[in-house]
Image 1: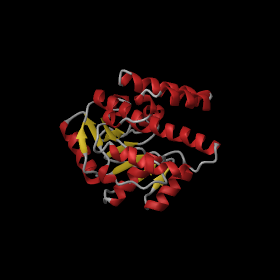
Image 2: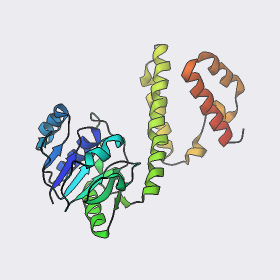
Image 3: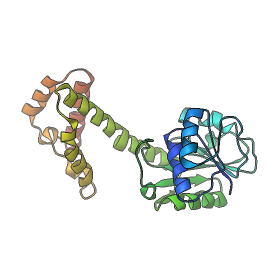
Image 4: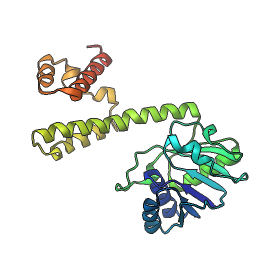
Length: 249
């Protein structure tokens, strides 16, 4: 099967790397950012182009949600399968006479951070059983955790991921702002972060909650509010209100 990955960002890089590591042949990686494509091509030994999209049996679109529809119009092959990697878009966003699908990896991707691809959940959708099998078999060569999905379920998978990853990382960034402002090394907090994450492998997150909000410790809550201002204060109040409402305090 001839496969092309379209994109030059973090998802495209990691997906291309996973393909190469698992000996899934790629005929091309295609995109607009020649600088990034050259890096990927040089590291993974894949042909790239910014102008001529190669003929393929399968195109996997790894671009921002806002660009998926426009990029999909560039594919003129009729007898091919096209899948996007978006967590929130329906496969029908793909604009062409080809067969359509979704190939969604549930992970946060950064170019500089190595990943264990075997552990990444992949969620597969297609218009017919044959195409589902194609996408399922390809994902199964990369990961041990491949499942079929539906557009509605995938929306909630993506929403959950935003809470569990993007929001949490933003809180890490805000926490570092506070520690930096007092010249406290953020490294001090890494064992706490590690334990917080490891704990939910064994304990339900709701049962694992600790801190002044769940204890309804008003003295500490008021003290912390006095130390904060601006957006960090609003986040602190919002999070504590959410915690107390969950536990009906």
